[in-house]
Length: 308
Image (cartoon, rainbow, N blue to C red; front, top):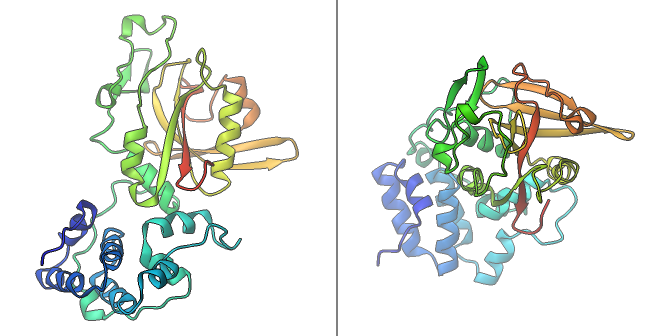
């Protein structure tokens, strides 16, 4: 009997050799329950090697569904030494959760070699990124999603081409007209795709537009995410409603009543620190391009368990 394979798992299986793919089919047939087959597919979708998946299948084959669920699921009241990144990854990767809870596997090295080398990443930042940060950086700088063109006011400034995302910027002749709030989702779908394996949902908000979230509220919400290791994507521009460029809010550092934010531009690869007071002043951002001087839109992350 042939068991259906998810699209995510099939994408990874396509990188496996014919021998390894045949082995995985046999593992599905030998699995003792639908839950076992589902977790094996999720392990494949999480980019584990054929040897790791085979060893995982051997370890869980004799477990009941109740025992398997317990072995591969992190409790709601997780120990304090589990990081947010671990919790998020464990929700999508049962093999990782199995090992995090003390389970062990013994992969066959010969089977591990049945995997083609992974493709080169599209973005190579000058500093080390976490899994969530790297996924967002690659998603925000994907050439198929966004493009740039020179602004007439400043040849070095870059303007976001929102056409690929469903919302176009005002034409040059109206660049100084009163801005209007941007409707629709510019980033949510792109980010959902970029972080699909991290089990993070996103909610997008305009900033400082009539009836929209205020910048102070946006920063307060973003602080809850970055302190848990989840970067917050934003759009910046010269005025409210004019979204010119994507950046990531990476970290927040508080000292007394003041707070500073680490900002990263995945295209220019500038990594800077900005005082929160300067952000609230809406006068200038510490990037080389001074045209985009304020935050105009923010996308706040939510895990499957709770909002950040």
